[in-house]
Image (tube, rainbow, N blue to C red; front, side):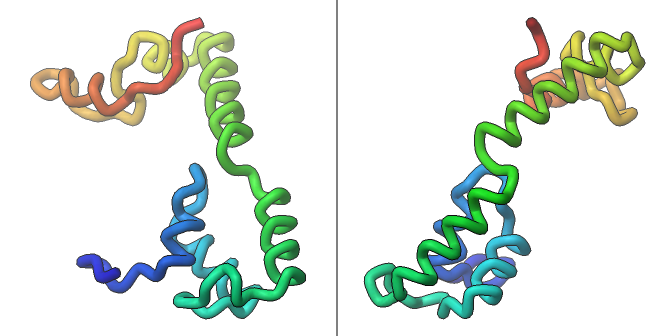
Length: 115
């Protein structure tokens, strides 16, 4: 598949479907295990598949990463820091403009902040 940034291979796209794995990490994993981008799953040896799943289990992805992000935001809120208060109010945290573009900022900063 071709994208404006360059070609995206099926294996790389399937690895990038995990929350927390991006383009660079997925290409690093493919090169580490010598997996050809167009290789079919059935053509890979079981040893390679188990090694890849073991490597993925060592990474912080999916629910673990979401939980870590939520805990970090909760920690900031409990401390009462400026960033924590901004998270709690649903406002931009990193100094973005709020005079005219606050609706866009609230729309894009949807993370579980309350509770």
